[in-house]
Length: 69
Image (cartoon, rainbow, N blue to C red):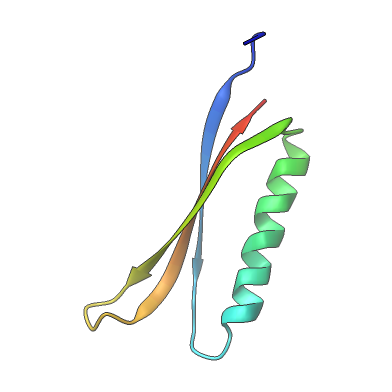
């Protein structure tokens, strides 16, 4: 590697019934803005996982992005 540094950033978004598409769009916009603002050269990995409540219902999403600067 020529001096690149790999970093990781975590994003979260609550999800509500019947609003998921807009909430995922908001999460995508948040991540894209971060990548642009930080002048990210290369995204190494993106991983999403759902969070659930005690009843097992999905209530949120966690997105982890590994990237080079």
